Image (cartoon, rainbow, N blue to C red; front, side, top):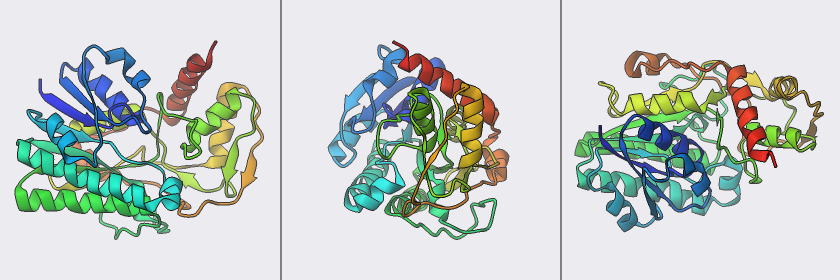
Length: 313
């Protein structure tokens, strides 16, 4: 078993990944500044991990956690398209400078491979579906620009310095430990939280926009597969379920699962949001061995159950 560093390991995806790595017997370090993450997310493995409070923008913070690691899973970021539209400078500092610091620290520490989180947002609003890794990117938000910059740095660090890097373009990940409280929260936790608390869910736009929603366990498995897969270094991969559903359809399914009738309130579309998103996952299947195992409705049901337990008195 190897020593792994998970940046952003107190966040939604990062904490699920850290827990899975501990369960597989790996030695796990977590680096997080807790701007969006929570120690509570790591409660199941708190005694088994090394937890460091630090900031990606401080190269020394990254260096002190990368030393001796065989694999770095770089998930730390300032997430959310709307947040980046409101504050592009901070998004740039955290997501681009921070990612560069991770690659520098990993290179200098002799890390074998860095698996880093990119995003489906790099594709922009192209009407061509499904999205293929060979399509030219067209970012529509500062967040998407930062993720594309991270991909370019990853490729350069592999080709120039020999650091093995693998970029994963996550598509609309959902599941337990996702925070619904922020004004920039993702749609599924916002919908679930609203339904469980008797509030009308808010849909930005007409609700016909569609997303390739991906359950977090599938993303975690893809990330771990990426740490070992031959032929993956220097590449980027779509990680998704491989099918799409509209936000109106999503709300209908959640209404069925919860038994709560929540009529949506519609608001204006948000700047930078794409209309439709769906992934081709053939490349990830062929090279990483990635196959999504969680049916969308099953993932939603497990997510609703987790939120219901969390909200229980």
